[in-house]
View (tube, one colour):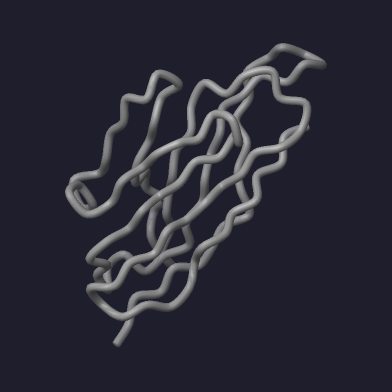
Length: 121
């Protein structure tokens, strides 16, 4: 009912930057939450950044000051600007959206397909 398409991942050197995008489509009535998560091999998935419908945001301590989350409500898209990337940022990044669809009006969570971010020299 809701599809999330992620883009923007890739290979960068330490200190470089990437901008991830996650576009939601489908019979969306409303989006109440958008967030970014990451998971490295053998590691627990962790929340990196989140943004509420009103625009307030929060970040994991490990990325605060380096990453910025934003959203374009007209495009149903959430972004993650990642600056000064470090090797420990290497992971698969997933976006998550909590939305209501017109068919049910029930709020559910939806996941993107994931995009690989590799930080290496």
